[in-house]
Image 1 (cartoon, one colour):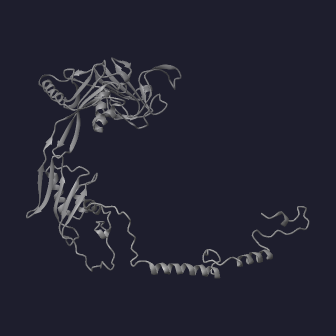
Image 2 (image 1 turned 90 degrees about the vertical axis):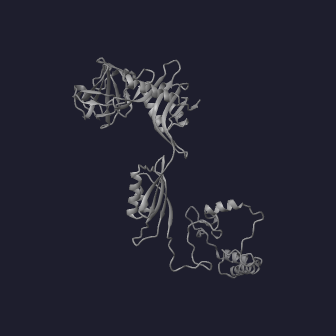
Image 3 (image 1 turned 120 degrees about the horizontal axis):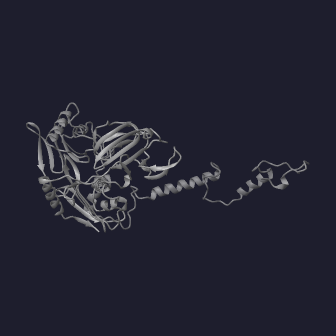
Length: 488
């Protein structure tokens, strides 16, 4: 901005012309120069102003003199000054720091780097090669022993031989297994012969492949394994699944337990005071490792209601759940026919196409087009084709006057008369017939009358008798004798 006395009149008359911003008049420049000349002499000079002027050179000379004086009076070597109270560490701590590569290289840190040539280190023309290499590798997901050995420098022949020997002895190398490898002197092809490889080839064995006079040979060291099942009991609390997980149950066993219960009780109605009881197979090695197996027994105790107790048993060539309290009756239940949410329930509703209220005889699942549909239970296909407003439909008879139907499908993969098992694919969801969009209309019939699928379970049927029933009861007694950890 300009002072008002330097601006012309607003009426357009003659006035003092405004000078550019920051420009001094001649008199002002003389005053400024005169003012600087009168400043007192000082060795403290701002080297960022009036560069290369007489004053600037005076300040530069002062700085140079200070640096030279410091160099002449400083101790030889420029070593850092010692601290007043250095921290003392033990010999064991110093060794640990060295092994972790956090100590100075001069103290022997194993950092794996190469030092450049200096007054203490001289380069050599040819670096000697190790005649023997000891390595550790970890088997990754989807990897194999032979590929791992080749990547680490072993010959293709030795890698294939070692892998074949371990597999021939029934060894199963799990992903994540640590493998110790010893390789010999490098050959002309750049590969090294395999001298020794050692690994855990299963919970119950350690496999060692070593080179001998006759070539590579396998040695198996057996490890004692306890196969006693594990029993876990506790209170359902705020969430049954998380109560199981907090009790040490593996995710697969917890999910299988919930699926087994879902056919007998509404899992959503389980109260915090209800108690779970389950037994699963387990193998524990003498070295401490353990491996959980499948679920063997599932039970739920509910206040004021009959407890649910089931045990796995072979029925008709298949492993199935059998009621432990029902004298060998097979537990049967419907499974969800499609992996989708329920969009419409059973009962009266306003039809979106016919525009009047009528009975909705099943439940609708909001399944996208092409979603797989499976049989809710074992049975025989009585219809597989077009069914008017139901579109493409599959009907399955399950025995005991029970039947199910699956409608509005886009494609069928079963034919009338075929026998299907629970969970077997029967078709794909669509929007055939009277339908406003892709979904599955699922109905359940008892004695030819449609009933609410949410409240229907199979009637238990006798599955065991004679010697088979006796063996079932004996196995159940063995499982019930198992103690176990409890969670209150």
